[in-house]
Image 1 (cartoon, rainbow, N blue to C red):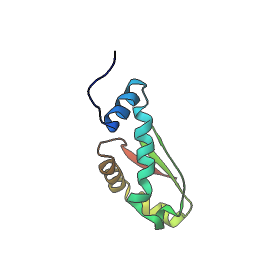
Image 2 (cartoon, rainbow, N blue to C red):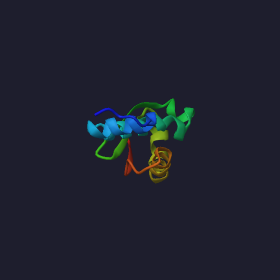
Image 3 (tube, helix red, strand yellow):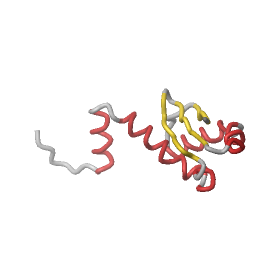
Image 4 (cartoon, rainbow, N blue to C red):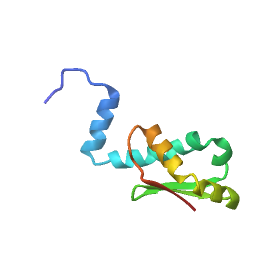
Length: 96
């Protein structure tokens, strides 16, 4: 069936992702891409890896002192990342 009314590109992309069960993957990528914006370039410089698993963002930090400091701010980081995404995607930040 041919569609005759216009559709916004963002809505089209969301619909295609949902139809193919890829919207969760897009959310996980969004959270990972927001990390440098939320923590800033100074902290991101020590970030070696990040991934989302089971609604938790895992971040590998190369500095032990920074890792310890970020552990105390996990709740704030979780809130800031979800706010940046515009919806609740993760429930916790795990610092490795």
